[in-house]
Length: 266
Length: 215
Image (cartoon, rainbow over all chains, first blue to last red; front, side, top):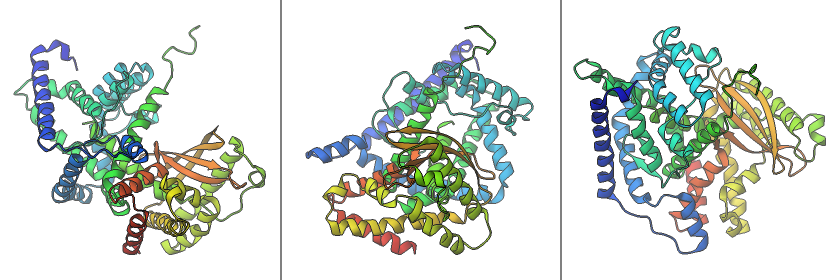
């Protein structure tokens, strides 16, 4: 929770981060191919609206991810849904969301949204205690609903454009802004600063695995639906991702709640 | 760790679009106030969605087979949703370049696409609740905000775009958690066209074979 007090660990997290980002960049360079830019005005307008100059590369990565998913993550997620009843799965999702709270809180602060930061702080406090280590989302019923805040949204709030569309292995739909923000979020996750030898590093990886399975399980039917109904699932997912990201950013920016109490004379 | 759930939610909600969005259409006549309204009126359009929403919940949560529910919903689709407008908007700039024959063929196919999308989702909805919130008027259209609840699922923020182009209120678009049905469908078609030499016939054939495989 207090990375600034552990400089050596911060450096380690930074190195991991740099390694991951470097790996992603290398991967992209290795298979990078650019889409042909149309010359007619209407086609050019469409091209710019798609904002996907790396489309051929992205499509390759999408197709590979899709194939790999069908034989790995999807069956695991299906088994998870089959074996674990819904209330337990909700509990797991709640625990994961509670553990992500510190990163959400810092992003709320970086976004200069004090009321949202207050919500997150209260959620973490209430759900970690009354909510039995985050299993139950008690805070929601007490007037502190969950919201999303991540590094990508913070960078958007700071005025950074999203950049072109990226489809990345494991991460899925992304953008340079979202990817940078994702790195920031890793640096903000408290479990990344746990000293070695505490067994918690293993726990962190286990949690990471569970969170991927939990997230995949949540969209089992819906992803199938998109792939079944869309003429071009890749483009449909790109559109869904962009619209949803923009809506989350807009909701955050439109949240003008004050933290000053009502009784305070303004 | 936070990124995946975000994506999960986006996809989840968008997929809920077809079902939750289109289910609320019902057979009953609009209220008197609505029949009189010729332009966007926040209060009247809120009542329109309120009335539709309640009848939707009755049909979707009610007993009966999917075929019976489908039969109940089908006529309303035509009555309360401006399907032709949505279809045109989904084709974007290619609507203008299409021949009248292509336009007619496309509209017929689009009706089937929409119906199939609803049929697909009908069985999955039980215990649905809807609460209607505020409406805002923008550019002559009302944006009515509702919250859809389903047991064991996160609540979904659904916005209904209501226009009065033909006099009576009709639904022009549905936006779930910021994801618009029209915009999503348009980017699907636009991308298909871009990869198939902008041929409208290719798009129509693809839609046709997709529908044939689904039914």
